[in-house]
Length: 94
Image 1 (cartoon, helix red, strand yellow):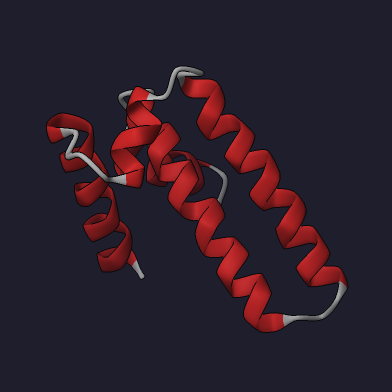
Image 2 (cartoon, rainbow, N blue to C red; image 1 turned 60 degrees about the vertical axis):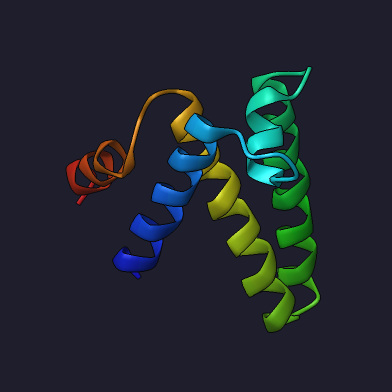
């Protein structure tokens, strides 16, 4: 799992730097709402995850969980943080 998170975060960082046209990720970095656009998406995806879990829809749970992880990584990038920051916090909680 660590490899895919690193790969995804690298893509997010690249999109942040290059802002390719037509990229959803790039659009989050340039959105008129700024950081709030990502925060709204995290809230929306969290609600969808909760509903999927309540309905015992494992496929939808995985899908929505992936959306949350993606938007969380975008938020970390926006805050000039990276996976090492997240890992350090998780290790501190062990």
